[in-house]
Length: 376
Image 1 (cartoon, rainbow, N blue to C red):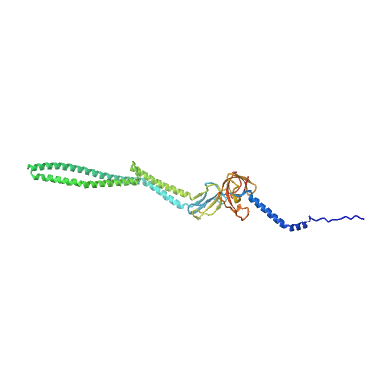
Image 2: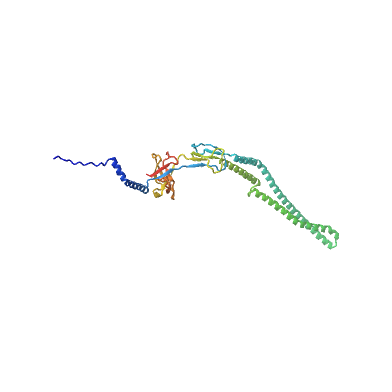
């Protein structure tokens, strides 16, 4: 009897059409597997600190005028590298130049009138002093005349008493006393009049002294100082005021020449020659060409992962250049961070801002460039 071999058809498990049909039947499994992987990714990303996003800080300087004026010239072009102190914008100085010319004319006039003013003031002072001296002399002469009148009255009164005694003895006649009695009476009247005359002279002396003191106060004469010295000091003060005013005008004129405060690059020009610009208007924007500081954005979930003084690794946007940076400061509060700090487009996050200082002085990163910051 012939041998009969049993034949079993092999299973076609590797046929592409069969494999693809099985995949289509099992697609929910792969979907859920992807969801699980995605969840694990987000869980590990949020639970473990891998790094933060940062931006190389840009030091921006806005060239703005302090006064409203016409723009005379812009002496730079877009993209030009400028040095510290270089003139960027020149404003029209015609108005301030006119004021400076007036101040200089006043200074010249003041120099020409100082001598005349000193001469006039000294003459006025002498007039007041002369008036006071004349009043004192008149008072002194009046006192002398009063003393003479009083002495004469005393002598006449003695003579009259002696003659009246002789008249009582009938040794002389009454007519011999008439003239003497008239003289005595006249001297008494004159002596009484000296009281009013003395009051008038004293008033004149007092008025002259008050006027002299008032002039000294006006000239601000110090104790023990002569009037001539006070006048000279006053004129020096007036000259100093004029010079200070002129210096102030010159400083105001310097404000019409706008200069760069640091080495930088012209980023943007907002106006053109001939424009009348208001005070505080932006004319030119300057940006520093290099920066040694980076501003990082630390998400809220990792607010305690970084400390001041910590050394971090900085990865440039090209992914090839690596640097090190030191944490300088961390903002004390949690704020809304910019969109570039979020790993999901359109999703806003909150966190703390961190300031880093690059430890390398020579680097190729550009201000405004986005970088990755990671622990060492």
